[in-house]
Every structure is written in structure tokens, then in C-alpha cells.
Length: 186
Image (cartoon, rainbow, N blue to C red; front, side, top):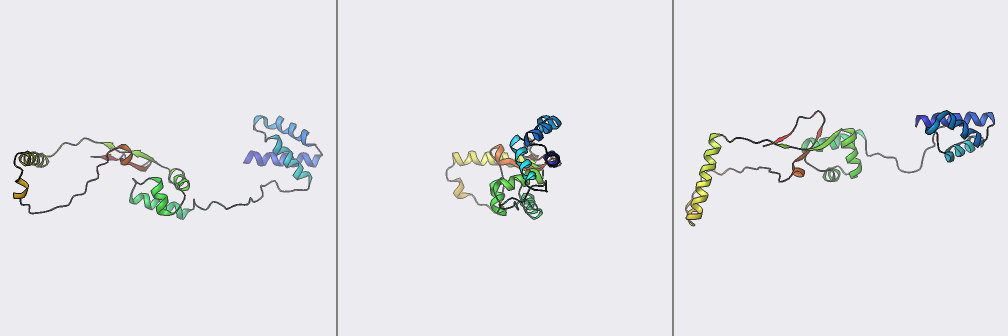
């Protein structure tokens, strides 16, 4: 953008000197080499300045301005990610009510996050966990040999345990910044 603006000033200067469009293009090619504006752009700007245009800045373009990447929307996306880093872009976009492309840009460019997979860390079982496993295997063996065992079994204390066990890398991937600690699954 800066180089383009600089060349527009040069085109305006050439117009004031009375140079033709071709002469202006040749002078710009000499000065800027490969970074010169296209010949169509040079001729368009030359004509505009010759017709009396004074401003070298772009005029306002018609159309809707982009309002999706505001500080408020960045904060909303960050809040959703803080709550659950395993969500994909589509689900985040549905929750905050923004297009997927804008949500992806907010995550990758504004929040500087990327999706990485958690590493599986092998874990040795404690003595108590080993005992639970042995008892479970023993009960499983008894159920197969004694079909009526479950009808005679009485349990006392019930505990509901939720365990998230992703089956593949994609399910275990999370959004993280470059400063986030390495996530591990056990």
C-alpha cells in the first residue's frame, strides 16, 4: 500500500510536469523496477490526475464494511475457547453467531492459537487401582461361569463417574497459544 501511494504521488507530479501516460509509465519502471504499478493502473491514475483529481488516497468503496473482527467478538470467541478448547470452528461460529471464516481468523490471527493434539502419557496403576482391576477381572470371570451371579449381586454405594476417552487424534485436539503448556491425556 505504501509503495502504491508513493507511486501515485509520482504520477501526480508527472502530470503537473506535462508528461504523457507512456512517459510516466517509463519513468516509474525506471524508478521502481519490478515493483511498479501495472500499466492499466498507471494510465488510470494519470487520467484521473489530468482530469483534475487532487487526492492520491483511495476513495471509499461501496459495500458493507467488515465488522466481525471487533474487540467484542474476539473476547466472545476467547470466552468460548476458555470454556472448552476442544470445540471446532463450526461449533464456535454457531455459538457466537459469526461466519466460520471470521471465527477462524480471530482464533488464528487475533488470538494466535492453533489446534494441536494432546500426547498420550502412559500411566502406571496404583496398588489400589491394580486391586480394583483384579477384582473386576475376577467378577467378569464369575459372571461367565455363573449366569445368575448378577441377579444375586447387591451393590451399596453408587458413584457416577464421567470419563472422556477420545478415540482418535481429532477428538483430543485442543486450541492453544504458543505459550500454552503442552496438554497431556492420561
